[in-house]
Image 1 (spheres, rainbow, N blue to C red):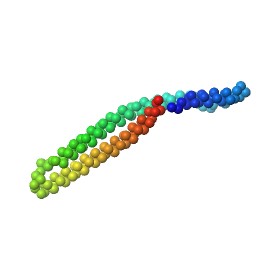
Image 2: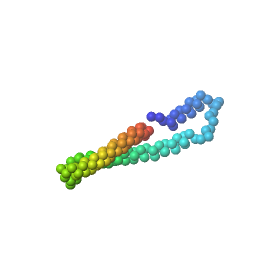
Image 3: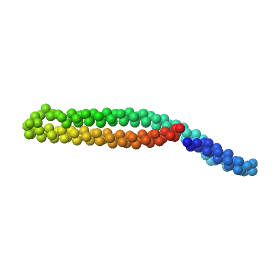
Length: 136
């Protein structure tokens, strides 16, 4: 894992060794170590947010799965329902078919929507996992 404080200090030490007693490093206009300290604090905030986001994505994934399951269950019911109409009557059969198709199309779209959201959450989770490497 990168360690910029170590790397900076090693660079300073090697430069001072190379310069010996005759030369000296110029004073930096901005204190690099102080800026690294600020960056470290910002990284701590990022890591805390990342951890919280991972918890929330797990929760959201579970809720999306519930919605998809509910839509599928309702679609199974719709596929076998006659809506209180008589399928032997031609006009009512047509109404049953239209209502079934409309509901099945809508519920199928809900299932696809949940898949889309889940796919995007999976992508976010991969990013969050990659960010967790910065915490080690």
